[in-house]
Image (cartoon, rainbow, N blue to C red; front, side, top):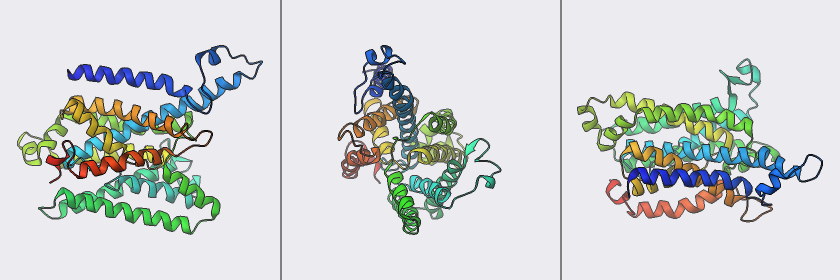
Length: 341
């Protein structure tokens, strides 16, 4: 099947998912319920739930899926390892730590003169700083000594992830009951509180990061074949990686600040798309962002319906799917056999 055909099919599926998932929930809302609603009867509540709650939630989930999957693709290409993701490299934990510091330390709005920095919320800024700190440490470890393998890099990421998670647990232990519950629920990841304000606060991070990644697809293709080959083709590897680290940290921080750390999306989506469409990032990047968006949107729809009227945090759903997928890759599934070196 041609790559353009696969992309077209993914786009059609994504459109269908975006149109149908807002109708799914504790109560299924049909088009008749929406367009037949009147402000003078109780049916208008269906319209409110659809447009004010479910639509922004679905759009937030789709945008978060785009960001996480695209970041996973970038990390897997730069480190040439299918297990390299924002979650396994500690970037998500670093962003979560930054956000937790802002939330629990009670940072005053006057810290920035207002409730954010250059229009961005304070929690997003701290989340970005935490993500940059985590990736800087991991990347510094991998370049500290020649001969470091990707396995060492992954171990460094796991160590950093545990370190930041331990700090978050320390904050949790020192908090009162309400704050402790808030931390636990936020760490599970979810979109139940997502609204248009949350979406608008997250989108700039994703748009800027996505634009940077798409602009550097040629360089990413060369880096994926090896740093030496990329240098011989005129690529400034260090500068390109620095830019891509900035872009991925920006996207991860924007998502984590709003939705909490959601794992394994950045691992599964790029790998599945690589099996479908190949390794050329000119095709892999659009396929990954589309598939990642629809995948996380479907996971969110499942999370709010599987035990309705209660909800399962979407991070639990992705972890239940990602755990076996991680083991499959670790044991050499698909392309992982040739990349785990």
